[in-house]
Length: 213
Ligand code: HEC
Ligand code: HEC
Image (cartoon, rainbow, N blue to C red; front, side, top):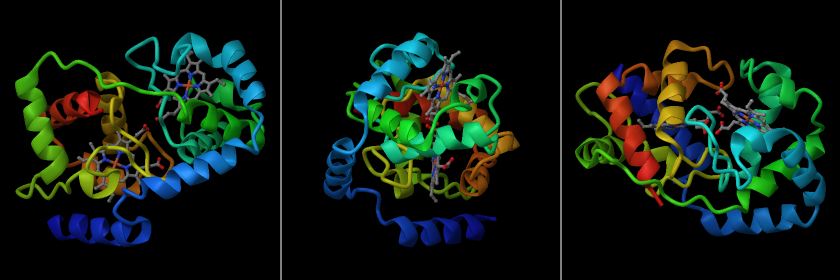
């Protein structure tokens, strides 16, 4: 099992790179921003999304993810997955079902350019355990380090979600969904990882992630 996790990590690593290609990410963001209708995105956000995701994309409930600062490609991809049901969510499906591809991209850019500051962690000792897991993984149970894919600073890349500053409850829930598999879209890699995390590790890594700038 341990071997599988390591091989999987290396395969993805060579596919997407070390996840710190921020300069080209920014260039792509700027280029895309010039070609999407941000006014339309703002209109959709104010009509449909803001009650849960918050006016600035920083979320209003612990179960709702922050969208601010998330990569636009990832947001568009997830919206499409909700629309088609590839990522099952009774909450999100009705909001995504009427969005066009252009609107999904515009919404992605709209949130991507908003800032997402780090959150305050109450239990710093728990977060310290999470810091270890995030950067080193758990070699005894074969958990790959999160930083290998999501980046040292948790900023993700075009292909991978940003994790830094995400709310603890949402991160914990997603790790459980990946582990038990109701998160249906593209879950192979994260399933392998999440299914090996203990409850303590899930709580710890989620606490650390929320504190990342
Ligand atoms: C009723 C509350 C609610 C509304 C309204 C809502 N969302 Fe969500 N959204 C959620 C919840 C809860 C999740 C987590 C779903 C899950 O994983 O099961 C989510 C997840 C998402 C995700 C995935 C984020 C990630 O990190 O994977 C995106 C993107 C998203 N919403 C965008 C939108 C957009 C755009 C709108 C408006 C068109 C919207 N949402 C409206 C509650 C809401
Ligand atoms: C081998 C690469 C890889 C490693 C290592 C990895 N991840 Fe992921 N992770 C991914 C990919 C790819 C996705 C996106 C899946 C998708 O498109 O739905 C993802 C998605 C996620 C998400 C969902 C984010 C969101 O906003 O919906 C969370 C949370 C997450 N990973 C946490 C972790 C944690 C915690 C670790 C370390 C214990 C970790 N990941 C290690 C590749 C990886």
